[in-house]
Length: 173
Length: 437
Image (cartoon, rainbow over all chains, first blue to last red; front, side):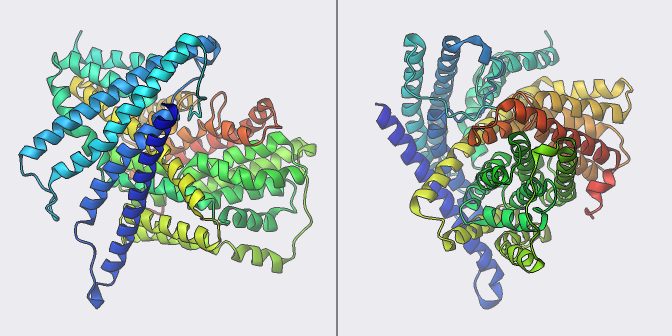
């Protein structure tokens, strides 16, 4: 279970990372194309739209890993004196809330997707149907729910038993 | 309870949740959603907002610059550019008393010109400079404090992720903000070097010195820094002259940095993978905060609390300078426990309308730029103030031999120059603004 959760989160993060690299390359090619208009080249049509669609997908891909490695910013100076068990309980509590939020976000994203599927809304230049973007984001959002469920279960078990299966890599501030 | 009171109540509730170790972005989101439910009396607006808002927040062209700059920062440590910067600075400064520590600060400033994150700058330069500092006989306290303070130059010197967020919140021109940050960033580096010179006079045993380098070698070391110079000029110059927009500039910079790393043999698949994974986690962290702050601020706007509070503050008849001092002091206090981005996303929607209503004798755009730079500096002080300065932790994790206590006591000298600089820049807006047309 643990290995599956980590593998899923890592695959998603890499996928998002590669999309990010693709956006960077496309943007640079578009800049070069625009600079070479005098010799008949031009910028990539709809580069803004592609960037927006790609970056949204990438960020949905990044979320599961961040949750799994406890990468979200927290303030732990006030709780550091509370003892190990109390901290495990707090960690479990917020992990459950975070996972519930991820489920809520995925559910509403699906509602948004269903809504866009019905209307014929497209992007301005490329005429890409907007539901494509929502549909693509549903995949990492769904993975985020699965990873979140395991992560919440794991943290709750740690709070109940006092045995921690993963350390906090923490971006605590 | 009136809506304004609900809005006011939300702050202590939010801070309590955050201080109980909730992820900051999650806390803002949950409080914002709960508040909206209470104010509107039904969950309908929330359900319909969430249909599109998460996607559209993430699908933001202007914020796409954030992950690109993060990736660029992670790639910048791979091409030998951090080593070249430190060697060049050391060649020019190493023979002075405290010179190697000054060189570390100078190298941080150089690295900050291609990296938009303070933690990444501190971590990268610490890997390069800490062993050299210890070998040259510098005390652990001075070495770690100089690098932690130097790390904040990553944010102060453009490009800067925090400035991007400030620009989108206040609709200020990002190119002008970058340009305005340049002189204060250089002043920060000079201030840190001055502190080192004073520190080694007060604590003579804390520093060593190296033999003087001949000028031929100094210039040779300086020439090795050319990729950094080219990338910085291309990115910031290109954005400023309008050759490309900020996202395009960041893309050019990230690709250039990647190519330099690859040409130097520093970019293989495992390293690219590690850079992408680090970018993924950092990006997700920032966007959860952006998303949460979006809902929290939408809730506040619904209660009309920000307008009411700013009107009330202005009506009290306090002088603008007094209010500015209070705002900056609040950032200093919050900065002791909170990270820069969360603070800015949380407070700018309240403080910026207050600033707009006050008269500092500056045009609105200039005021927005000047205030942005002042806020940038005070939130960065939080990165190096005990008890929870993020940079101190990062450096401490790399140098396990120095007790945190020694770092704390040495870093207070650097905090003192930061505070002095804030007072000077606040008193003389022209230092920040003279480059802005």
